Amino acid sequence: MKLAQRLYLPEVVSGLVLTAGHFFRNMGAHVARALGRRDARGAVTIQYPEERRPYSPRLRSLHRLVRREDGSPRCVACMMCETVCPARCIYIVAAEHPNPDIEKVPARFDIDLGKCVFCGFCVEACPEDAIRMDTGILEFSSYSRGGMIYTKEMLLALEPATGDGRPTSPVPIPPDRRMPAP
Ligand code: SF4
Ligand code: SF4
Image 1: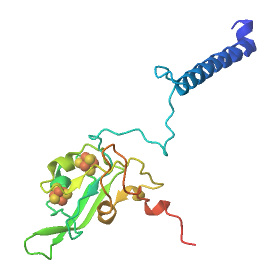
Image 2 (image 1 turned 90 degrees about the horizontal axis):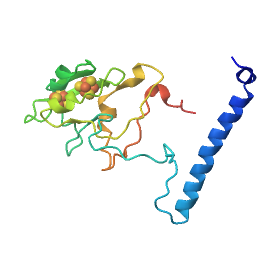
Image 3 (image 1 turned 90 degrees about the vertical axis):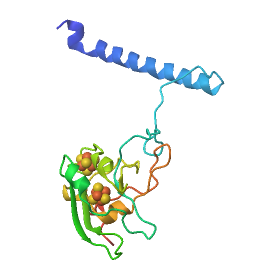
């Protein structure tokens, strides 16, 4: 190492000069744009989560179960999605449907999102269009593996996102992240 490198000071000063250069260049571009120079463009920071970048309509986000008009699941528990799922993360228990025109209904429908690879095969395989991945919700996390299991009730409560991918349902909070009642 040369003496200048061992002192570190020249490198520190050089880093500060570089950072200050970027700062003033960006600031100048933002001021010029505010004054009407439409071609001036500074670095843009998106203030996430208050601001969100529009998502592609093809984005596969958190699943939801589609409801019938009476609020019951459109799913007929045919097990196609469970069978096709490469991650084996869908778990369905079928039950008799009270309506004799509909053969079955899921008594239980869980998806373990900790294992899901978001391939969308379950959506493609469904003959009833009963499962979709269009909620626009990407911020689901948990402190435990169990908290990543989304139940039928959680999936039925979700709504589709807006055209630019903004979620319209609140992000579901798994039981292990909920605040205890006072
Ligand atoms: S997106 Fe793919 S991995 Fe996830 S539940 Fe559906 S089929 Fe399984
Ligand atoms: S493929 Fe569709 S109808 Fe069949 S069990 Fe899955 S969600 Fe229900």
